[in-house]
Image (cartoon, rainbow, N blue to C red; front, side, top):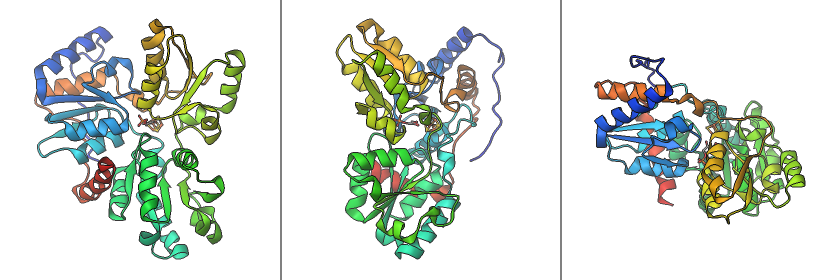
Length: 365
Ligand code: 13P
Ligand code: SF4
């Protein structure tokens, strides 16, 4: 990743209204040369400027289809990397704040995954014959490239089931990283017993597992998690249902197994929005996902008499998504208007083709 200092536009202490007007003016000046992609967890002040909004899968499809010269990604770093890998020659991807990362993605790195692969080889023989590596899209590009090189694939929260079916159709086992919860919740929903899953502790030799445990597992789950979704607890659901038993509970699959087991619906951000949009007027919803999205759902559906509640009693936001604010978006766009490309995300060419192979396998499904 090349780090460049963000050159701020004049007037960084401008009011929110100023930023809104300046973003609209810069968008108008750039016209069709610009596409802004916005993830559902983005704060409202930038989300409202997105040309396309969506979950990770939808945004990767939008990025691949875009013809714009500049793709400004209001999301986190791995999403901008995916957009760069899928981009056409002449297109550039920009992330308004380079410090917008993902703590879950940081829980797996290439050195640790390659060590796991070597250790699995010692126990199982050639892993390329036995294990499909599956990386959640919330991961660094070099891990997607690793999957591309080893016959593996990328998944998102909305296609994880289809991706696991694809993977098991090819090889006997799956190594799933970095999110243990998405892997466990998806595999369990497909009928895999918890005893047939093993958790790979990436800080321990052989993942802290015995050779017998490794041989018996159908899926090996990297011990990563999302710091936002781990905040939701089964007791939050119990307490709410005790007061409002008619409530529908809907959660993101990055939540723990215990939380997902208590939920009526489990799915990606796009699925959560669609499910509540299609629900009958007057229904009540308890939602286990990031606060900015839940707040937006609450505002959007209250006039239909639907009440949408945030699951945790404490505030839990994705602090890295939150770094993309109106000031950073404004600076990025005004720099482009002035002919300056700042905060470009460009994956190393050596990894781009292998990562693309893993992403293309996913997009083809
Ligand atoms: P979605 O693909 O469901 O939008 O999830 C992305 C993400 O980072 C959730 O934490
Ligand atoms: Fe990463 Fe969790 Fe934020 Fe999603 S919500 S970007 S998984 S830290």
